[in-house]
Length: 70
Ligand SMILES: [Ca+2]
Ligand SMILES: [Ca+2]
Image 1 (tube, rainbow, N blue to C red):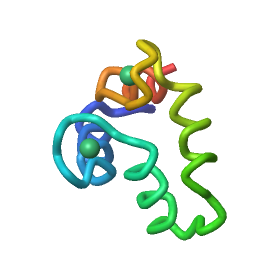
Image 2: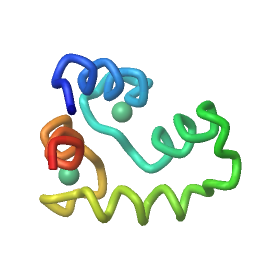
Image 3: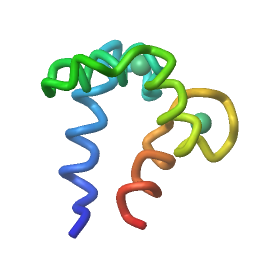
């Protein structure tokens, strides 16, 4: 189901400063825009932690894609 072009578009929408990494703050903002206002930054950090393969506390596209394509 997962499509890498769609995933890249989604990634770029979340990565608002365009540095190629999704931070907890960016993730929180994206979820709020999607209507989920209950997500705090600490919740976003936990979500990122479960997907963060190299432990740098931000999501690269590879990590984002690995999660989606599972
Ligand atoms: Ca970013
Ligand atoms: Ca990472």
